[in-house]
Length: 216
Image (cartoon, rainbow, N blue to C red):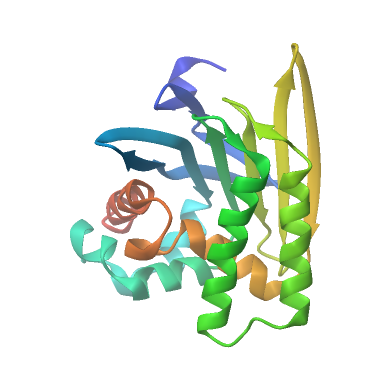
């Protein structure tokens, strides 16, 4: 893959186009997750969001003419984006090594809180999230450059999670399929939730690129 076919996000290359469930998707948003500790700015992960531009713009015409800053702050816009019937792939690349259990608990907690807020956290959701925690706990550490891929097929109410890492030059992957519609939706919203999402830079990037697409 040539440099022209990738975008560097914090020294992490993201392909501009990928194919998921046989459908071509484009990189329409990118950013990082980060924290500040004792005035130090620490970047944790790099993120790339892939969608079908044609499907997205077709289903977001009501937002045409809106400004980038307006959309970046609009919960309704991101709620509409989450509901667009397109495959969504979110690639998360580890920048700062983290315990697998820590990443899993962060994800589980964010999804659980969102489900509880809309009274959708039942036994089925709890069981699904427990599998997510166990999946990440099985990796002691998510080392730098480990890749976590969340695939949300347009035709199914589920999420497929793939964790890919390289140990001593050998690439290893493992997968988890979460067949719970509520959990899948809230997991997607964790990354695509506008001002309330896990990565502000990613949602601002999405707003910027979608404004450009909608103006064509």
